[in-house]
Image 1 (cartoon, one colour):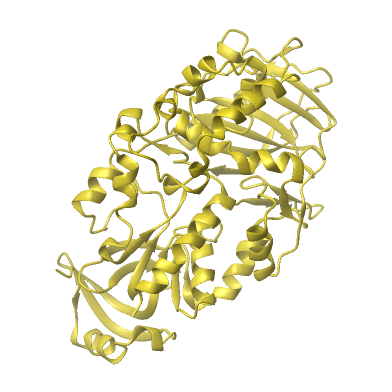
Image 2 (cartoon, rainbow, N blue to C red; image 1 turned 45 degrees about the vertical axis):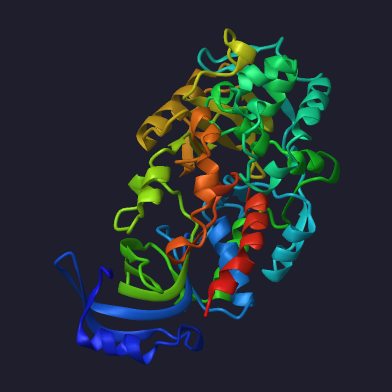
Amino acid sequence: MAIFKVTPLLLAAATGYFSLGAFAAVLSTTASVTINSVIYHNVEHVERDVVVIGGGSSGTYAAIGLLDAGKTVAVIDNKARMGGHTETYIDPATGVSDDYGVIIFHNIDLVKNYAARLNVTLAVANTTEYVQSSVYADFRTGLENSTYTTADFTAGLMLYMEQLAKYPYLENGFDLPDPVPEDLLLTFGEFAIKYNFGKEFLGFISNFAQGLGDLLSKPTLYVLKNFGPGVIECFTTGFLATAAQDNSLLYESAQQIIGDDNVFLSATIIAVDRSGDCAQVLISTPTGYKFINAQKLVFSITPQISNLAGWDLSTSEQTLFSQFNNSGYYVGVFGNTGLPTGISIVNVADNTTYGFPPLPAAYAINPTAIPDVFNLYYGSAISITDDEVRAAMYGELERLQITGMTESTPELLAYTRHTPFELWVPAEAIAAGFYSDLYALQGQQNTFYTGAAFHAQDSTLLWQFTEALLPNITASLA
């Protein structure tokens, strides 16, 4: 049953544009739409083949792929820009850029071809280019730790890779066998002890598992997906990044290709109706209300109930999405820290298992291409407020007592909230077929699903996942 009560003028417009694939232009109207007894005036009517919810990594890739398949699209995002977790700070004094969101991509043909499609040049990333020295410190006390090391991590890595090789399907998504292998349901702490990975490897892998929350208590499934064969292979081939060290260029180019008339930023979803043979979305934007009528909808945003006001969620969607938990991940770009130039500082707790700092806490502070500007990476087991995070970041910087550090007043130049970050469910839910049920949603209610909750917090893996999904979307269009 449709939730939209459309005035005669808008109904006439919809009838006149009944064949969705034949029209791409926006039709301006002075129509009104009534939803739940609220009348929205001066609503602009937009007809597209597909409406994409979310302009981050997955949504943007889907939109470009659909355009290349000859389909029309509308992309909706609540931010003022496309890119999702991709964030870039440009130093106003020097023009030098700092990627403080998504930093690197896998060195594979799909990534290279996608960047070429967007007319963006890639290069092998030197992830330690600006690091002149590295130290460990307990950020709770600010004191350096001169005895902690991860230098001999390779033996543990080999043992880890032996276990990882048992589950090649994890690189493609959550298409798990039934029953789910018991080792995937162990906490990662139990899994690490069972296979004797060792303290130094666990310290090493923790650098790649930032944002997962309490790493040792997470089901092993999530860690193996986060640190999989694609990531490990890049230790040999090298990771990729944009040659300009500005990964936001990918999304700026994508927006130009998609077209401003097809991208709706700073948008708030008021209502979604996916009943019948179409997907309808009413949004509020800085330029007014838009009523988007499409054949299909691509869902690429965080599937949590709190994020889906106005959606016509099915019972299955409500049941599944309500089970997700999430961790928090945050990054601050700081100047005037007093830290020695080029120093990298990793947070190591003196009295915890494997030296993992109790969350919420900073993971590390790393130098950037911008002289004397540092990125501070911070994590939490659950969502916390930005005010709490900012205060904690300042506190940890002020406590540090690093050799060569000078007294100063840190300045927060930029900040981003990658939260909710990793979405996860308990081992019991995984064993009970949660991901089988989640994947069964594909195609229901004229909707196709992609995004990190359906695979991993990894742009490359999400592009691969979305690429595999695109033929199903295009085949469903009339």
